[in-house]
Image (cartoon, rainbow, N blue to C red; front, top):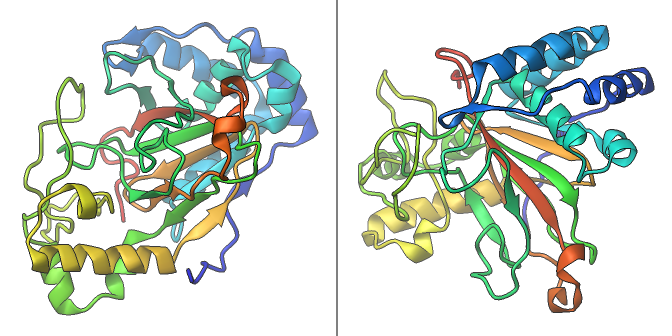
Length: 311
């Protein structure tokens, strides 16, 4: 059984006064433009200017950044449910507001040229159950683990939770998990012996990193614990390196936090601080109409140089 972390999830609520003000400016936020993979600088500045026009936003933005990069932090859930109800999750005004909040943290971008800034993660009953759009357990991982410059933040906006009640989000602090491992296990994890998945048609995430160490203990380490539990089933690893990765996976489960995202909840994860995943969806997904199944929207963020990189 997981030994659930006693800390409460970092939920950030908005006051009624702030929600009313944001609903009012929602229509004034422009549709976004992109420059290559990134939200265009002109759009970014307009979003920031509009948000700064609402005095209460500054306090929330500071709280959000502290939750993501402050001592002991690394993730936050911004509760935008009332905005979602007022505007509708399928209304561009709501998505622009969510994007504007993301822009208070870092620069939104899409490393996938075939997908828009926000990528749909729906439910496909015929897909690999362990994938993000599958119905099974989605094990702890960091996104784009095999890139030399993974996204600094991964974000998930809940449009619809599983109507059958499954699929809680799970997060775990990999640095805390690593600290509980033996010296020998940590030494194996620091060897460039790991690899996972294909690497092609990706923008602004560096080069393919293969093989890579899960731990980078050098002075120039970037703070990432480059781990995905999926490598245990889908990558050919030596027995010793697989056993070390399995030990880390077990420690991540022991230290996990778990919570259910509600409509409008916006989860932001600092990938240098936390790994994420999802418990299995409830059985019976085949009986749920596609339009009613769980739906998340995913977007990635790139922090300015030197920001959000401390471990």
